[in-house]
Length: 105
Image (tube, rainbow, N blue to C red; front, side, top):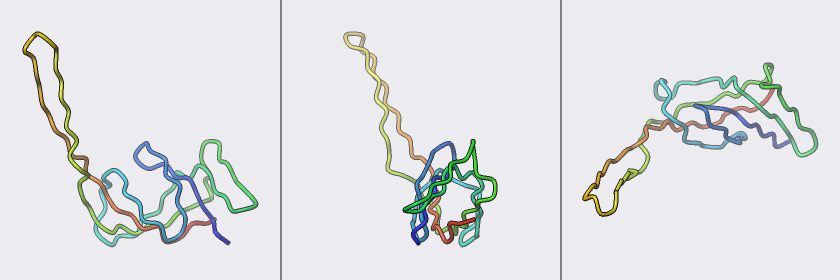
C-alpha cells in the first residue's frame, strides 16, 4: 500500500511518501537525527484520502536529517533606466535534506 502525505515545513507544502528525499528550508537539527513532522495536511492512498482542517493531529511522519547545504546563488539586479542606477545583490538559501522514513497514523 503506497501511502502519501502533504506536509507543511517552513511555510511550504511538500507531497511525500516513504523513501523520498526532500530539501526544505534550514531546520535546527543535527546530522542523522530523527524528526517527527506534525503539520500533516493530507494523508492518502490510491483509494482513500484524509483531509485535515487544518491539520491531521493523529498522523506523524518520521524523517531523518541527511545533511545541511545551500541552494544555488540567486542574483538580484535592480536598474532604473536613464538614471545611472544599478544595484547587484546575491542570496543563497540554507537548506536541510530530509529522508522520509515512515508515513502513517
